[in-house]
Length: 291
Image (tube, rainbow, N blue to C red):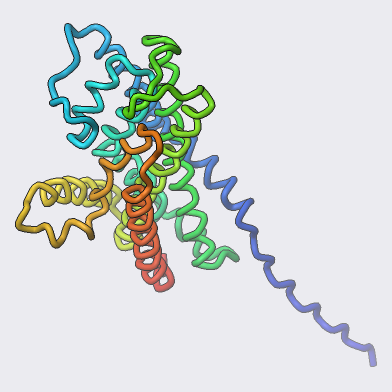
């Protein structure tokens, strides 16, 4: 009797590493025309602000109380200070445009792919749900980091061209070296990236629950606007510490010498909490998602 050869056991699918998945994700992200358009608009924002401040008759009126008065006071200082221009641009961008960029990236990451049917391929491939969410969250973080870095670089270059290297001084009246200036701007870039990434994490949680990307963008922008309104109501002061934008004006602290770290650290911790909560909610939804 002829021996029947045993059938070979099927080879288990090998898990795909996060670096490979992230490279593929970033290629898709930066091939989208809308992503490039948003990054271009954000990068042009500091140049537009700097040129506008140069050719107006005088700096905008916003009081002379220093950065504690908000973005208007930063614009007053940015009119003749090459160091303040990138920080002022980042502060203004954090009010609406950077949340828009984070929300768009998060909406495309899950809701957009779900609406086009491409997310099902991710869910059927040998990729765990946690690894999938990690790749999407890192992709959103990279988009935010690129946007913030582009704004900071253009702001520094524009400020130096318009005001010269002699017009670099802190709000405390000191004149730092160029290396110290780059260090302060690097701190601002990392801090703003963390804040915008927190918004992206919340947007990922919403994106995991819907197939409509515009719903994600509208919900996030609506939340940012509502939070800004709530900040103006003194009767809701008990709620202010829980709002992500409570510490956004603290970005001006990097322009002081030495840098006060209390508000910046509080804002970073608050953003980290938002990231943890947002990604936890997104994970809780995505592990039950069928397609």
